[in-house]
Amino acid sequence: MASHSEHARYSQTAIAEHAEGQQHPIRIYLVVWFWLFVLSACSYMVDYVGFEGYLRWGLVLAFMIVKAGLIVAVFMHMVWERLALAYAILLPPIAVLVFVAIMAIESDYTALTRMNAFSNGG
Amino acid sequence: MAETTLNGVPDEQTRPEGLSGVVADWSSDQRAFKSASWGKAMMWIFLLSDTFIFGCFLLAYMTARMSTTVEWPNASEVFALHIGGADVPLILIAIMTFVLISSSGTMAIAVNYAYRRNRNMTVILLVLTALLGATFVGMQAFEWTKLISEGVRPWGNPWGAAQFGSSFFMITGFHGTHVTFGVIFLLIVARKVWRGDYDHGRRGFFTSRPGDYEHVEIMGLYWHFVDLVWVFIFAFFYLW
Image (cartoon, rainbow over all chains, first blue to last red; front, side):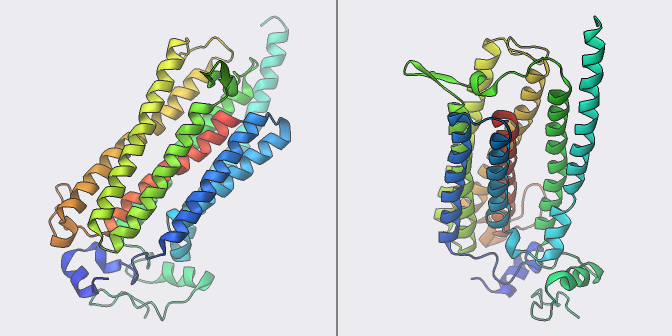
């Protein structure tokens, strides 16, 4: 570990640098890496085995969320940041989910309208 | 006050945790993000904006797919490769996924070595990450070539809904561009580490500011984000 005074002499960035500079044992990265491999293999198997319907979508979503969580939390060090940053970054994407809900309703309506129109000979 | 002191050492001990910590950080003067430098905070905010961009692409794809009355092409068959006399579904995409995850792993360990001031290992791992990223882009180019030769266009394809092509080219093209820029970014940071810029306080060509090893972590944030986006593309475009 270089001392703080050394950092401060070199750069503005360092002024806010946390005391540890995100030092974690390499083992934790290897464990997460291993699990990302396993989870990816699992989502691939969902397609390979040919699950359909809610089982397929549920498994795909579950593996996706766990993978995304592991990457953000450990690889991107979010669990070690202060909550002020975590909330500022992780809460706004909820707006995307709201947008998804709105557009899902809208698409259903569009599909219905199209089926109606096309069944009468376009 | 729990503020950054004059000598640049954050006064961690007096800072509240949990929700009261959020309120204290946001209502304090000078800065809201006590644990992140401005560089890291800005990278996070950029990634948040990128999240909205990719979110909107996937959203447009969902809207097109849900509202079309034409059958959506079966990704499992479209992206199958003919290996050893049999069609293996999605095999190229699966390999691409593993390559990108591996590059994320090497990146995370590169950040670790950078903070340990182990320049050799950091450079090796950064270059390895860049190589895996380039491999990914190469495989994507192969996939695009294959699909284009089979007749997939942004306005139509032989198997079903026309929006399949436009969604595919838009989403994977934008992601591939991100990976390509990431590879360039990785090589620039690798060169800086190799030259010892972060030890000697050499000024960057773009910002004219001296950097430090936190730049490797900030670079890593971008790279992990590219991997993160692929997790969503893999789930929604290829597996759905």
